[in-house]
Amino acid sequence: MIQQATFRDTSEVIAITGLAIRACVDEPANVRDEIIASCADSILWWRRYPDNSVHYVYRIDGNIVGTILVKEFWNLSNLFVAPQFHRQGIARQLVAKALEVCEERSPKQSVQLNASKYAVNFYQKLGFIPNGEPRDLPGGCFPFIFKFNQTP
Image 1 (cartoon, rainbow, N blue to C red):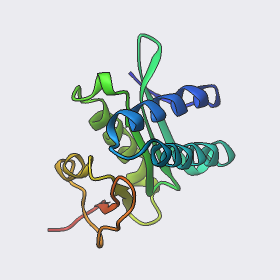
Image 2 (spheres, helix red, strand yellow):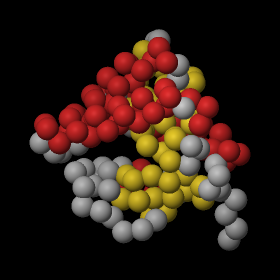
Image 3 (cartoon, rainbow, N blue to C red):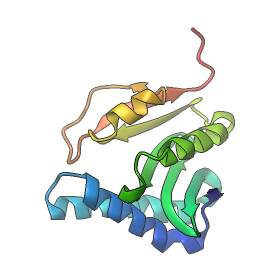
Image 4 (cartoon, rainbow, N blue to C red):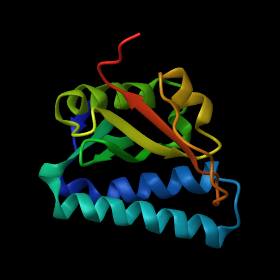
Protein backbone atom coordinates (compact mmCIF):
# COMPACT_ATOMS: atom_id res chain seq x y z
CA MET A 1 0.00 0.00 0.00
CA ILE A 2 1.29 3.45 -0.93
CA GLN A 3 1.40 6.03 1.85
CA GLN A 4 2.90 9.46 2.31
CA ALA A 5 6.30 9.16 3.98
CA THR A 6 6.64 10.52 7.51
CA PHE A 7 9.71 11.66 9.37
CA ARG A 8 9.48 8.45 11.43
CA ASP A 9 10.13 6.51 8.20
CA THR A 10 13.54 8.10 7.61
CA SER A 11 15.77 5.33 8.98
CA GLU A 12 13.75 2.57 7.29
CA VAL A 13 13.80 4.45 3.96
CA ILE A 14 17.57 4.87 4.17
CA ALA A 15 17.90 1.15 5.03
CA ILE A 16 15.82 0.11 1.99
CA THR A 17 17.84 2.48 -0.18
CA GLY A 18 21.09 0.93 1.01
CA LEU A 19 19.80 -2.61 0.57
CA ALA A 20 18.69 -1.92 -3.00
CA ILE A 21 21.93 -0.19 -3.97
CA ARG A 22 24.14 -2.87 -2.43
CA ALA A 23 22.20 -5.59 -4.24
CA CYS A 24 21.77 -3.93 -7.63
CA VAL A 25 24.69 -1.60 -8.30
CA ASP A 26 27.75 -3.37 -9.63
CA GLU A 27 30.42 -1.07 -8.22
CA PRO A 28 33.06 -1.43 -5.50
CA ALA A 29 31.72 -1.23 -1.93
CA ASN A 30 33.17 2.24 -1.31
CA VAL A 31 31.45 3.59 -4.43
CA ARG A 32 28.13 2.02 -3.43
CA ASP A 33 28.55 3.63 0.00
CA GLU A 34 29.03 7.03 -1.66
CA ILE A 35 25.85 6.53 -3.71
CA ILE A 36 23.95 5.54 -0.57
CA ALA A 37 25.24 8.64 1.24
CA SER A 38 24.13 10.86 -1.65
CA CYS A 39 20.65 9.32 -1.56
CA ALA A 40 20.52 9.75 2.22
CA ASP A 41 21.38 13.43 1.70
CA SER A 42 18.30 13.73 -0.53
CA ILE A 43 16.16 12.21 2.19
CA LEU A 44 17.58 14.68 4.71
CA TRP A 45 16.81 17.47 2.22
CA TRP A 46 13.19 16.27 2.24
CA ARG A 47 13.13 16.50 6.03
CA ARG A 48 14.14 20.19 5.76
CA TYR A 49 11.71 20.96 2.91
CA PRO A 50 8.78 18.53 3.19
CA ASP A 51 6.32 20.90 1.53
CA ASN A 52 8.54 21.14 -1.56
CA SER A 53 8.50 17.47 -2.45
CA VAL A 54 6.58 14.28 -3.04
CA HIS A 55 7.74 11.40 -0.85
CA TYR A 56 5.89 8.11 -0.73
CA VAL A 57 6.60 4.70 0.72
CA TYR A 58 5.13 1.34 -0.20
CA ARG A 59 4.31 -0.90 2.73
CA ILE A 60 3.64 -4.61 2.92
CA ASP A 61 2.58 -5.97 6.30
CA GLY A 62 3.56 -2.67 7.89
CA ASN A 63 7.13 -2.75 6.53
CA ILE A 64 8.51 -0.32 3.96
CA VAL A 65 9.58 -2.20 0.83
CA GLY A 66 9.75 0.72 -1.61
CA THR A 67 10.19 4.48 -1.68
CA ILE A 68 10.11 7.40 -4.09
CA LEU A 69 11.20 11.02 -3.58
CA VAL A 70 10.62 13.84 -6.06
CA LYS A 71 12.25 17.06 -4.93
CA GLU A 72 10.58 20.35 -5.89
CA PHE A 73 7.95 18.34 -7.81
CA TRP A 74 10.25 17.87 -10.81
CA ASN A 75 13.50 16.19 -9.66
CA LEU A 76 13.01 12.45 -9.14
CA SER A 77 16.00 11.77 -6.92
CA ASN A 78 15.25 8.46 -5.20
CA LEU A 79 13.26 5.43 -6.32
CA PHE A 80 14.14 2.17 -4.60
CA VAL A 81 12.46 -1.16 -3.94
CA ALA A 82 13.87 -3.89 -1.73
CA PRO A 83 15.37 -6.54 -4.05
CA GLN A 84 13.10 -9.35 -2.86
CA PHE A 85 10.12 -7.27 -4.05
CA HIS A 86 11.45 -6.43 -7.54
CA ARG A 87 9.29 -7.23 -10.55
CA GLN A 88 6.04 -6.96 -8.61
CA GLY A 89 4.95 -3.57 -9.95
CA ILE A 90 5.84 -1.64 -6.80
CA ALA A 91 8.20 0.83 -8.48
CA ARG A 92 5.70 1.36 -11.30
CA GLN A 93 2.94 2.15 -8.78
CA LEU A 94 5.18 4.53 -6.84
CA VAL A 95 6.13 6.42 -10.02
CA ALA A 96 2.49 6.64 -11.14
CA LYS A 97 1.42 8.03 -7.75
CA ALA A 98 4.25 10.60 -7.69
CA LEU A 99 3.53 11.69 -11.27
CA GLU A 100 -0.12 12.32 -10.37
CA VAL A 101 0.94 14.90 -7.79
CA CYS A 102 3.76 16.36 -9.85
CA GLU A 103 1.55 16.89 -12.89
CA GLU A 104 -0.30 19.62 -11.01
CA ARG A 105 2.64 21.02 -9.05
CA SER A 106 5.74 20.77 -11.25
CA PRO A 107 7.04 24.24 -12.11
CA LYS A 108 8.73 22.73 -15.18
CA GLN A 109 5.67 20.76 -16.37
CA SER A 110 7.91 17.70 -16.27
CA VAL A 111 9.74 15.29 -14.02
CA GLN A 112 13.44 14.77 -14.66
CA LEU A 113 15.92 12.22 -13.36
CA ASN A 114 19.31 10.68 -13.87
CA ALA A 115 18.84 6.93 -14.19
CA SER A 116 21.42 4.33 -13.41
CA LYS A 117 22.25 1.96 -16.25
CA TYR A 118 20.18 -0.64 -14.40
CA ALA A 119 16.99 1.43 -14.64
CA VAL A 120 17.10 2.80 -18.20
CA ASN A 121 14.64 0.27 -19.66
CA PHE A 122 12.29 0.67 -16.72
CA TYR A 123 11.96 4.43 -17.17
CA GLN A 124 11.59 4.13 -20.94
CA LYS A 125 8.68 1.71 -20.46
CA LEU A 126 6.98 4.33 -18.26
CA GLY A 127 7.19 7.01 -20.95
CA PHE A 128 10.33 8.85 -19.86
CA ILE A 129 12.48 9.95 -22.78
CA PRO A 130 16.23 10.67 -22.97
CA ASN A 131 17.11 14.24 -22.03
CA GLY A 132 20.74 14.84 -22.88
CA GLU A 133 23.91 12.82 -23.08
CA PRO A 134 24.77 10.14 -20.53
CA ARG A 135 27.60 10.96 -18.14
CA ASP A 136 30.26 8.54 -16.96
CA LEU A 137 29.46 8.27 -13.26
CA PRO A 138 29.42 5.22 -10.99
CA GLY A 139 26.37 3.12 -11.83
CA GLY A 140 25.76 5.25 -14.90
CA CYS A 141 23.98 8.56 -15.32
CA PHE A 142 21.33 8.64 -18.03
CA PRO A 143 19.22 11.83 -18.04
CA PHE A 144 15.49 11.32 -18.65
CA ILE A 145 12.41 13.50 -18.67
CA PHE A 146 8.68 12.85 -18.42
CA LYS A 147 6.74 15.75 -19.91
CA PHE A 148 3.22 16.59 -18.80
CA ASN A 149 0.60 17.90 -21.20
CA GLN A 150 2.47 16.64 -24.24
CA THR A 151 0.90 17.49 -27.54
CA PRO A 152 1.55 15.06 -30.41
